[in-house]
Length: 475
Image (cartoon, rainbow, N blue to C red; front, side, top):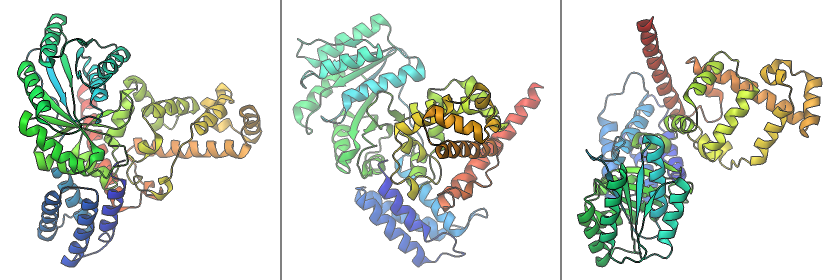
């Protein structure tokens, strides 16, 4: 994650405040100083940092402590709220046209991953809205740009409009829009040319395309790895094109994350999506509140749940949830869940979305070898159908047979069965709204994790009451 170092520094600064019965002005100043340095090192805009620290101090020193929070937790809440405000408060979607097609114009410098992001956005619209997009190849300068877009179109089974012999980009776009109208495409995504830096010929061409296309959305694709320079790029494009939003790419790279924290405050334009990975499925809606939670080590359970739901049948998910609740989750379900988790992306990234796990020392160098998952599957495959359905049948002699059949040591078989039972018991408690005992897990005793778990508990109880009302109404 882009914010690992920043997250660690901020949490360290706040950790000193937790557990104190009373917090002095000096305590607030010391914590603010550490947070300020952490943000500046993360390449956050200086003015943004200055305003942010000022607000934290004003809030922390002038606010009455809520009854449910101790003074340290109150400061964490203030930092969380201000981080969320800095990044835009709530998620922002695309502007929709009253009549099809909705036109999206993608702009940005060279090397930001713009063409790949066109494909990711098309894929997202198809998955989320069953959309029928048309892609227009408007980058006629970069070698193989048209070929790249056509290859993406073939992979997604999405039509691509291109004219390889045409040198007038505005004309290509105009002709592409006519095709979209004839084919009744509900979205048009225009890929445009980039440069190594903003120059006049580029801006003039983009202004011509804007005039012809009259786009509902002008999305600037920005490389998060450029840090604070990304805000300067955003200001440059916005001043000429009046962009409607930003897509931040390479947020999973070795970056300090300053762009995500600065860009909304500096430009006033929202980050709409973030790209984290090379696959065409690696585009997420940007939620400021969830990102703030990640930075403060509270995890991001909502995104984790959404990731799981993307590739999971709702009816099947309901059945698995019920089995978890009744503690009848078996090894067949377990292998099925492993397959689903593998689809969600690298396991170390998935784990860090769980409250308390973001900066857990035990996960610092976590590198899940795919062989380990294959070993687990081999162990389960060596069980009989009855053993998979009823783990209580697994006595010592059966375990020795499974070890021989899977080619794994008995000690590994025993460990896997023990971990399965512990996980099953824990999930049974959680699905019943019982979070007791979670604090014993590594990293779950941190103040940030406790706050996140308290929030989850409240949400669970609220949803439980809602479900009960619906149940009573239908009965």
